[in-house]
Amino acid sequence: MAHDHSHNHAHSHDHSHLTEKRLGQAFFLIAGFMLVEAIGGLLTNSLTLLADAGHMFLDATALGLAWYAVRLSRRDGDDTLSYGYHRYQVLAAFVNALTLIALVVWIVIEALQRLNSPEGMVPIPALVIASIGFVVNLVAFKMLHGSEDNANVRAAVLHVLGDLLGSAAAIVAAAAVYFGGWTYADPILALVIAVILMRGAISVLKDSANILLEGVPDGVDLESIRAKLTAAVPGVTGIHHVHAWGLTAERPLVTLHADVTEGHDIALVTAQLKAVLSKDFGIDHSTIQVEQGVCLDHADDAHKSHDHKEHQHN
Image (cartoon, rainbow, N blue to C red; front, side, top):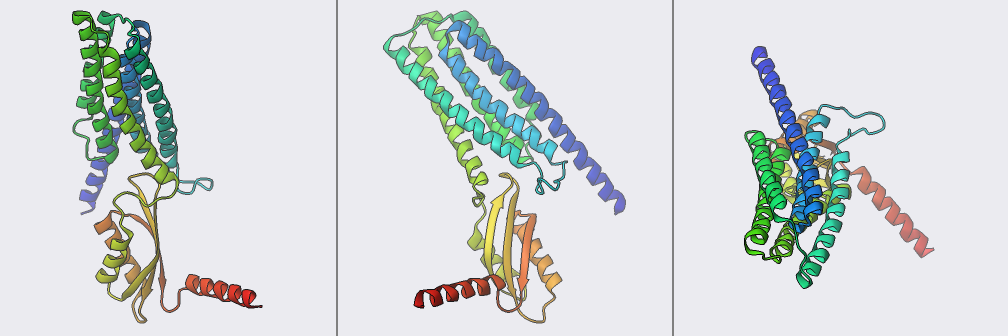
């Protein structure tokens, strides 16, 4: 059995290293071409290329944060950051989302101005750059395909697939200008990419803000946790003072108080509570305070309330 465990651990480590390597390669590929596309957009006066560069920035951010998250998973906390360094990726996502929203506003203003007074663009270089961008995204997708068991990688793959649409829009805009001379294609398709980009940016902003504000993570239902733990663990008569938050979207944490009847083994009850949280709710990090009798926090609250009433009465 020991041999099997060692083999599984080694396999898990190898798989994690492979995932990290693929994420790193995809990140540098997308980030590198994002710069090419941004410069190309400025030189060819193609708004769709600039908008798609913004979309690739969102992709590069997602890939970079996923890569960073895998690297951080090997790093322990210290006396300064006792939970570790996971929140850095959330903070980075929040700042990047704000940056992207500002970029979208600029793209929309510029696109509306170009619809009023169309500007020329250099279609052939724009078409070449957009086509290469489409290929780059296909390569990045192939790199990541097969590692989707990691939640970060799944999200990154969706970003890359979304960016294929942006590259396709840039190709269509350049082709429309080159073959039909229809200059309106560029601002119209830039607006389409801007809408997609804004949806992605707002989603990232909401998710990261919720984590930074210690909100309850998506998929964590506090009422279900109370009901399940009370019903599933013998000796538990009630669950209260339940708090849930997340270090990142994939790492939920919970603290709670459990009322346990006299005569039950506290260590066993705690282990059973933790097992249910892990198995049924995917929560591997929990802090549980087992109580037999009056909850000290409730008693303290009641004492404060009584003192306050006495003060008002006097």
